Length: 339
Image: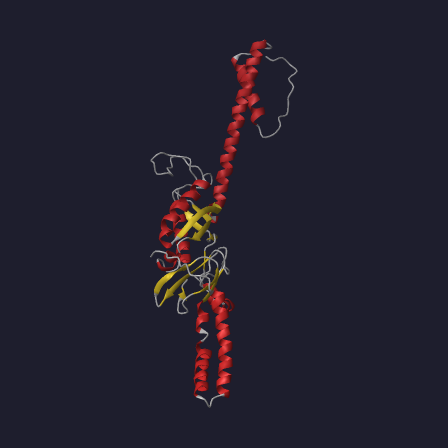
């Protein structure tokens, strides 16, 4: 289905003004015809005025008002006639009907209300929608943000993680959005969930050895936590490839929530703490060994004291205990002979 833009003139105000004038004239003519019902002309005027009073409202059905960044897809007896996109007060064929299958679909996104119950509307919401059915048939061309619910997905190492995304999107082809899919909002939501699952399972939560996230056969350092921009870009491309046939454009996708699932969060926290402790200990030991080497070299250079191998080993042991200990060392003064 190819979109066809209608270049209908904005004659809405003219038609409304003429219709109201004809109604006033019909009422006056009806009254005048009843007064002069004895003449043939009076009877004809009465009949014509009565017909217009009964059917004169039909042209009013063709009046359409569009605000900026709104569109109206029109069909006539089941045939697609075209789309009105520019703002203004229009008059179209009164028998044309506006089509928007996603008019009553409520998602967790900007422009939609009642995000917690997208399908089960309350009685109040349903009555409000019934009163504004015409307005709901308009298709918004604005940039909207879809914030789907968080999903629990296993990463490439099998660890369950919870992740959520926000997708910025808009309608670019109204004909495809209305006629190529049953409901373009639900279609977009399902494709977002599917793309998120397909991409997340290619990455580990954190950097892991021997993991290829790009598919080139070479291990890399990609991860959900450290490569969020790359992951979001791949998710956007995946969604765009699926929704192009629905006339939608994905502008941006961003990760809004990322964490380990609750059942392994505590264990993974202990693992991260243990890894941090090991890294810190390694740094302390490296520094302590360097300091001991420097101390021995300075003692030898200045010939402060002559130490045999056994005394050097004892000195190294004492210095490492002092430098690597968790608490301050308690000094012990040796007042006797070194040997």
